[in-house]
Length: 146
Image 1 (cartoon, rainbow, N blue to C red):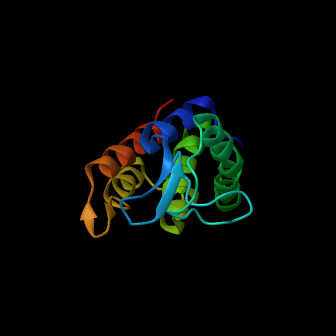
Image 2: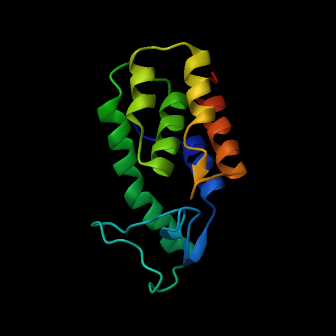
């Protein structure tokens, strides 16, 4: 599966765009739409040159398939497009979670999956972040939308 425009919009709406490198809430150098590395695996550094919005879109588009591949390889049950998009958004932000993938593969209840989405991966640097709480809720809502 591939991420839909709706899924891409979810990701970039939470990531936002930065033309210059910055330290994300976990202290990791980041650029563009939440990119922490470039195609080929080179990590973003605080000394990197600024990029245009067009370059940011190109960078995002070049790394998104990595996260789609993770979801496609870890999930063994059929998914709706919204479920796939929600999992790709989560994986783009966190690198993926075997705990969440297991719940989905085990066809856990909506309550169990929603609880997992809304209570895990909501901290950075040891602090609960409202932006991550909002993102996890949006991912859960997308996962369970028709």
